[in-house]
Image 1 (cartoon, helix red, strand yellow):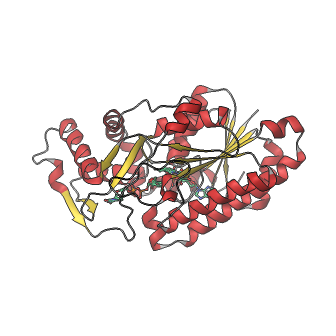
Image 2 (cartoon, rainbow, N blue to C red):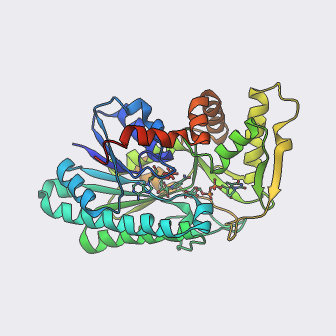
Length: 356
Ligand code: NAD
Ligand code: DAU
């Protein structure tokens, strides 16, 4: 028995792989292209674990995916690989279409072909968990009810549109070809190993080095924050007991304005580094808003709670405290990301060997 994870060198994927290896003896094959967002240093703890096989490659590479499925014969796929940053999708949407739409299409096609080659029992047990986002639902007004699984899709950024397209493909492959897909739509994650282009790690690292803390617009946009390990726990449950053809919304029931999030990070840093002369919040700097910036996201997670018994273990306050502590306790990881040295490790380790 083995599972295939895509994008397992990224933020959520690497947390998932590390926790998988901690919770289970079942091997995990990890297919990742190692874009700027992929960082093998996230997986250092898994490096010498024989239950972890890293494969450097693109989900859009049809031959590679086909050979990998045939050779490894996984019992499930957990599909994280994506271009994931909204701001990057505004500046350059092409890669979002290539990976999120065409890459997912390729993975589904090869999965469909693979399922035709295996026995009835293995096909019946197989699962394809498609990891997606609450951004597909669009933006909520202040008094609106949180997103449910039945909320209409209304994506507003190229990133959200590309994820919506991939969700539709995952659904269609179940309905049309019987590929046992399960879709999860999760709210904003934060925690260890998040690349510092996203709000929380960006603010932590800028604040530590005395740089401005950029807040888009009036800072009143609301996100529903979830500690990454709670997301990983939800995905493990969905993989184990989720029903093919279903969608599960996952969220932290922790709505905060961006300004409140930034202030909360600053307060924790004031506490951790009391010697600083000024309060970190004095670094807050309001900057031009993101085009098409969704005002509010909120998730109704009642379905996954009711059907699978999932609940987040961390509150926003406890999760944020752990996150700030993690960034302060891991200066080497931070330094390699900030300097770009983590990319050099890829060349050093994979340059001569090439893809597996
Ligand atoms: P990330 O950007 O940190 O990691 C993405 C990973 O995918 C990287 O390791 C990258 O190298 C890899 N990758 C990119 N293109 C690839 C390709 N063509 N082939 C193989 N690997 C490729 O992203 P993340 O924040 O960890 O998000 C993971 C998934 O979860 C994404 O699908 C995202 O849409 C979804 N999601 C993220 C959040 C969040 O708050 N970060 C919330 C809900 C859902
Ligand atoms: O909702 C789930 C989504 O959350 C995921 O699907 C995405 O992959 C993930 O990147 C995240 O998207 P956001 O756009 O919400 O995350 P980001 O960290 O980029 O921004 C969070 C909020 O903070 C958003 O309202 C924009 C704002 N922001 C962001 C940055 C980087 C700022 O005000 N200043 C900043 O510098």
